[in-house]
Image (cartoon, rainbow, N blue to C red; front, side):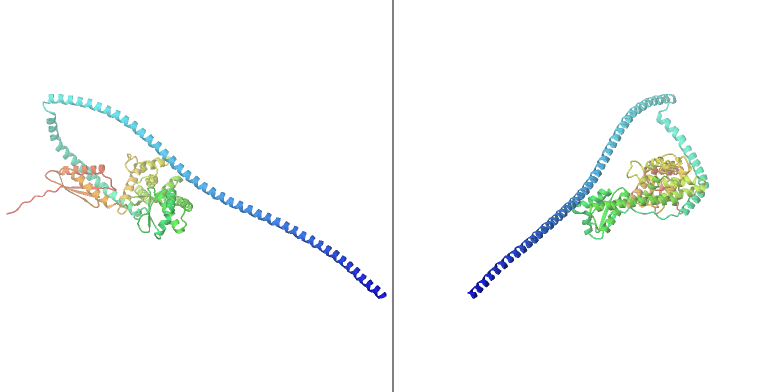
Length: 520
């Protein structure tokens, strides 16, 4: 019994121990599970919070990216709007210019119509007066014929025959005597003055020609300059105001424009674009604007340099700038700025030799062709444009007269104006100063001979010395020595009225009589 009791007790103890152990195991397992669950919940909450932060940052980055994209789009739209606005402004300016031109043309047409109407009225009035004078003259001639018992033709022939020969002989002798005396006294002095002036001046040959072509490195560059659907070449032409001619000429582009400043802007811009390599409309506008600014500085510097070289001071700044534009202007191949400086030097030296006002002569010589700087932009001759410019900027009236008279537009009122005209002729007519085409040269020679041959009694005529002299051989049996003198003057007058030429043309009439007898 004791053994069984012990065994039962042991079994009971084991069972109790097992139950107690199972209880504590469940207790600690439940407690550990609760702790693990709390840690899991915390991890989940931390992960959820971190996910919210990441989501918030991602949303913010997306918003920033959207804002950046929108700003770039707005910037591009703004640039395109500005470019479109510039194009619209240019088109509007062109339309305004065309409208002003149309108004100006209409106004001129109206003025011309009014002038024509007045001229018609004057012509009718003049015809009426001529008719009355003709009737009075016919009546007077009829009375004279009745009194003199001679017809009109008979009386005229008698009078002409009795007076013509005597008058011609007396006039020829008198004219020859005056010319001999004047030539004897003036030739040496004039030669000394002019030769000394030219010797002191001694300027270089002026034969600069306008550059109208641009060399390109290869034929591929032509395509880049033209651009897709011609947008680049249109942008260049629109920005510079010139016409670009891209033809089959190898590695060459031709620039066509009457305005030398625009042509120079286009030439320099093309050269810079070719060197830069980035040829597209926006870059073209930037280059053209930069070249224009640089060229304005060059023009101003050229004008200031010319005034310093000529020692002509006190010119208005706008006149100086306009004078600098002549650096890019040529006349028959002669650079107009250098020609103006040369005329200034010669006029000043001539004035010094004869005691005239040197300052007025030099100032007038420097400014005499200033109108040529604007004659492609303003209507009128370069003389009238130059006069208006000088008046606008309050130049000395004596200088204005030099400009006005240097092409015989008005009567000379001062010695300085004559000196400026003479200096202008010397500068433009000296050998090498100007170029002429062969066609114009041949036409001038033919016209000289044609004018000479149109006079009765001329046997042969020859244009010599590059058209600066025409020698005329007359028939001695028809033309006397006195007639030869008058013929030379008449031919010279007809040449002056019908031809345009630099310098002077000498008319040399030759009358030669030969008497031949044979001794047998």
